[in-house]
Image 1 (cartoon, rainbow, N blue to C red):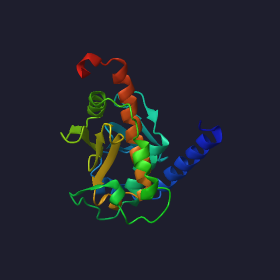
Image 2 (cartoon, helix red, strand yellow):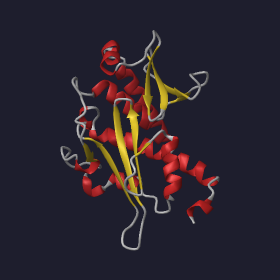
Image 3 (cartoon, rainbow, N blue to C red):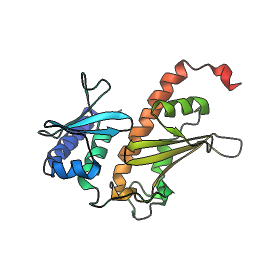
Image 4 (cartoon, rainbow, N blue to C red):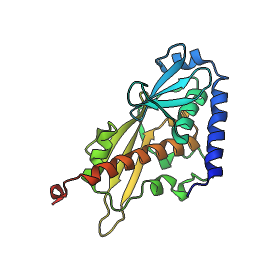
Length: 222
């Protein structure tokens, strides 16, 4: 259970980043990533949702209905967006080469080091049904790569993707998940920010999975 003090700390950190965002040249950010904008907001797509950043407060929100209604961005998504917009390298570009996220060896130690296998434990779900998982990935506009038991490419942002690959458990091996990214992803965000981005997308997949699972016709699996 997450305590109220933890929630409060997350909100404080998010508010702090909103303030830091306001210190950056917004026109430069807009041109760098070719972002839609107007006098009040900067707009950006993130994992299939439309977000906007308030240009006066730095606050981030998202909407399903062109902002007739809106929701405050959660901690993981907000911190990922701030990090990419504010701290990505000036000339960041894709290598167009996929690598396993655990192979990003430029990071030494910390809670995300390979032996802790954060990303593997995050995606662990021994009872996932692959057809349900595939539909959940498609609900988030994932592109089916026709590899592994389930493999989909997702747009984190229009300019930056990742791949989820999943293998069902069998009598010899447990269920396995891998996350693959562009080799140059650390030009776009800090390594620690991958924790926020991947946590967000896995949580979105799990939410879609539960919705689909409740109405799934399991005779299809026979």
